[in-house]
Picture 1: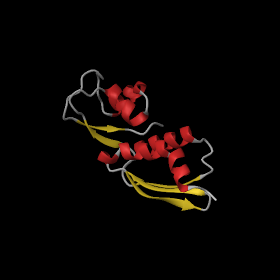
Picture 2: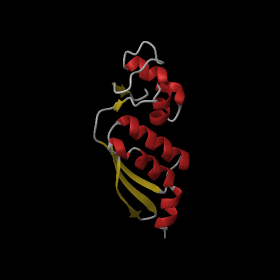
Picture 3: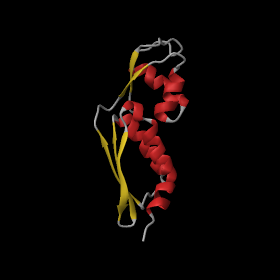
Length: 130
């Protein structure tokens, strides 16, 4: 018989990833056992954040054979974001993609000619990576 607490511990990086995007509307809707699998139900606001959750799942266990997941995306593919004081496109790229090196994709998607010149308070859209 599967142990719920052991599976929750194993997939704690996935749970933490979902919770880290709570300010954007990501939430865990339920965690329980489905036979020998951890049953994780979650809602995320965009494909960008869903991709980050998938990255976390694959890092924990590429086969995720002991995980039954229902991750529902309720918003658009891209993730709206308001630039904060101290932000850079590299920092935003790290947050949403897990790497700072995709800042040019964010700049291009938003028509930003110089990635080093962004304005706090400006609204951008973080696109899903193709």
